[in-house]
Image (cartoon, rainbow, N blue to C red; front, side, top):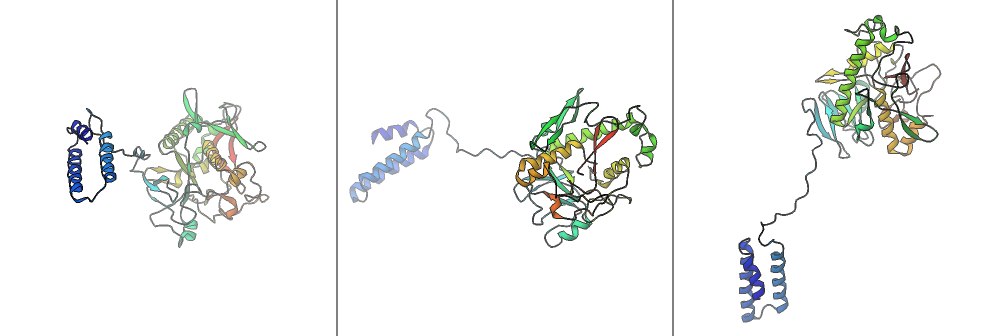
Length: 365
């Protein structure tokens, strides 16, 4: 008993509670001798408890503080909260929802794994009204990009898109090196003589593209738009893709809604501008899809495996392949992966990616 009390005394400067415990223990022991109410085994337990408390303190050091778990990193710390609202999905992923949009609460649309859907407008979308919302409100699906370094590379000191080749035989994808005569973005096409396509002023004016009259100006605009896209993905680690093919293309305002048949017969320049004008409010702007964004969407499917991986390399039966015909957007759930419809079949999906000097890359047909 003296040894234990001596140890307590040494630690007295660091925790008076231990002294109190030792004193109380001594009193209890004296009472026990008189009343024979506790055994020596009980006393041994009391003593061991005191020893354990003493050994938890560093003699000559400061009192320890209880262990606390490391705080969860705030992945939204650098998000622009004037433009987006952090919303937690049903599978516990925090997603940036742009101002002017709401995250779907409908079954099958509220997880990132299966396709996190947002609807333009303020009204809630749930199981009771989702069918109507699909046909009347613009919709986009979140595509996560966990490692943006896999989406971008550099060429001549500038950030450019990292594009990929998807091998249907091996079911794997490999990086494509940037090439002035091959696949690349951002860049322009001017034909073999340098005076066609993006070099023709009337292509811009007839499509309603203002302030651009030549290829050099358009290249500067594309580079600026690409840089903004890259910065956004670095910040939010993902992007939104239209849930359906761009529709209502013969009207003043394009849409991405279910059941639209007006999806073709416009020039690339016209659709480029219509996609830019579809969403332009609250600091949020839409765009025709970049090739690197398309590839990241395919990589997302591929990494999830199973039927989603198979879809990337063989979309037979996973899209409308009618001869010289299209069908309405979102016509069949069979044509959707992660709530994104018609990436295979139906109309060609135009991109901002270029190839050679005369081609803008199309996907999905």
